[in-house]
Image 1 (tube, helix red, strand yellow):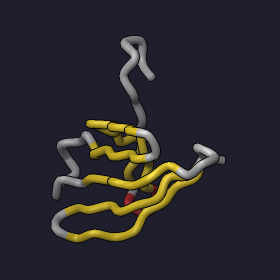
Image 2 (cartoon, one colour):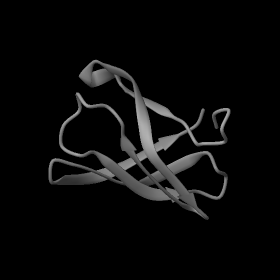
Image 3 (spheres, one colour):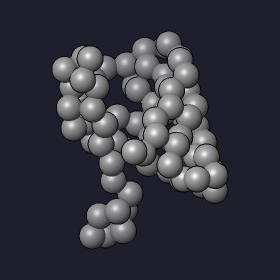
Length: 77
């Protein structure tokens, strides 16, 4: 969270040479989470929708961009 209490985050995509992409529209409701990638250089309206596991360390769901959808997960080390 930032100073105003808003959720903040960023992601890196090393295989695509992309680092520190800010997350936008972060929404968490119970175990559901969604966010967009807030970068005008990334095309295709990328969006993630998924769930947070019981440990709070892993999220998984679907990532969609440019009409394509695939599974996605990430885990805090």
